[in-house]
Length: 273
Image 1: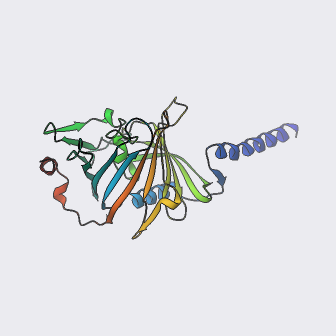
Image 2 (image 1 turned 90 degrees about the vertical axis):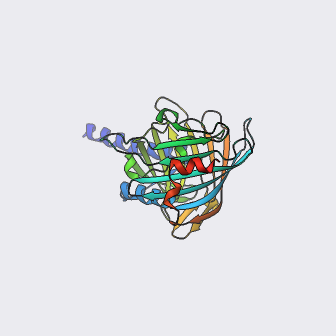
C-alpha cells in the first residue's frame, strides 16, 4: 500500500508539472481527442491554397531595414506545390526571380529536396539552391529559403500533439520532424482549433537552447478568403539575434487559374529579361 501511495503521488506530481511547462512555452494545456494527422492536413491545406499575391518584406531590426516586394504565384498539382516569385523592389534585386518545383521522388525516411532555382538578372544566370542552403537567409530577411517552400502533411513525421490555450483561444500544438532539409530538426505548429489557422511556427535544432526561428501570425492579422483563413501579416523572428522581419500579404487572389507554363525554368529566364 505504501508503494502504491508513493506511485500515485509521483503520478500526480508529474501531471501537475505539465501545465507549468506548457505555460512557460506560452500555451496552457486542455483536454483533446483529435487526430493529429487530420489536424496537420487541414492546417497545411488551409494555408497553402492556390493563389497569387504580392508580399512586402520589411526588416524591423538589424542593418538591412529596406523594404522588399515580391510577386508570388503558388499552385499545387499531383506531385506537390510549385512556387514562382519575382522581386519588384528595391532596385538592386528587381527582376530577381525564384522557382520552387516539387521533389522528384521520396524515400522511406526522407523525401527528395524540392528543386529550387534563382534567376539573377545582374549576372543573367540561373542558379540552383542545394538542400544545404535551405536554412540560409532569404534575400536579406529573417526568413529562410526553406520558408517559401510549401509542403504537404506527408512531408512531416508527427512526434506528438496536444491541445492547449494560446493567446486566449483553443489550439492544437503539434511537434513535427520534417522529412526534408529545411535548416532545422523539428518544428512546432500552433494551430487554431476553430479554423485551422497556423498561429505560430517554431523551428528547433537539436542541442540548441533557443529556436532557430519563430514565425508568428496573430488572430487580428488573419483574413478569410473564400474557404481559407490566411495571414494578412506575419512576423519572422530570428531565435539567436531577435531580429525581426514583417511579412505583409497584398493584392491576394485565391485562384487555381494560374498558367502551368509559369512553373518552368524557361519562363523563369524570360521573366528576368
